[in-house]
Length: 194
Length: 110
Image (cartoon, rainbow over all chains, first blue to last red; front, side, top):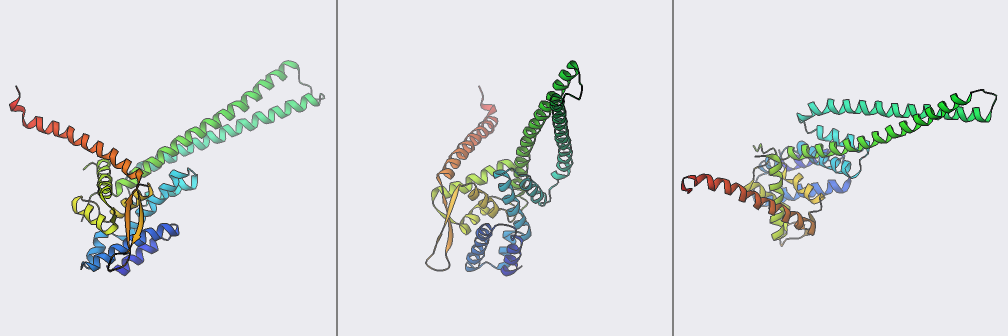
């Protein structure tokens, strides 16, 4: 491979990154080639040394998306980090992926459940309030008290579950980002030098 | 070699070189890869990570002949990180030495 081909592939693969990131990386590689050639090394040898440009680009993109996910724990950021790190082609994902999917389903279930009982409790409360105002709907005293307890209980449990869910999600996201980071870094340290 | 360990060592190498003086990319990449074995194409991503962590800054400088070069300059944060890694490294070496030396000298024990 020649320098021009190498740089072409690299810059094309880096297109997903912001302009300043691209510029930083391209500058480094451009400089390495220029000085290397000036010192009389041949282009093929330099390409070999710098490593497959497609793999190199993947590494930069994975690192970038990880940094973004670390800075802002938003769902799209996490997913992107996950996707790009998985793109490095690592075995560990075969185990991690189903586990995360399973966790995600449970958390989604919990989320829906907490939302449902909160809404249910609220509807019940509204019904009770209406029945207070509109005394034509007859509910006797004991029943009314029971209904009030039930509805407030539902609402508070629902909100509590919802909050617990958020805490769990935050905790898991933190762990996932840390895991992805270690995987991406390990990938670069493999030491299988040709 | 243990991967997590190697990562720390590489960081320490880069930071130690930069603590001494400013380097341009070509120099530092070659110096590191001469001494320590890495997969092809991982040294620049490593440098970029350290840069993004705020361990060094870059600036352009023109040599007497040829195009301008990007120099890496260590930051106070980088120096701090270097000191920490250095301390850990020496502690580690000392512990290993204790074991290795003692083992070699078991016959001398009173």
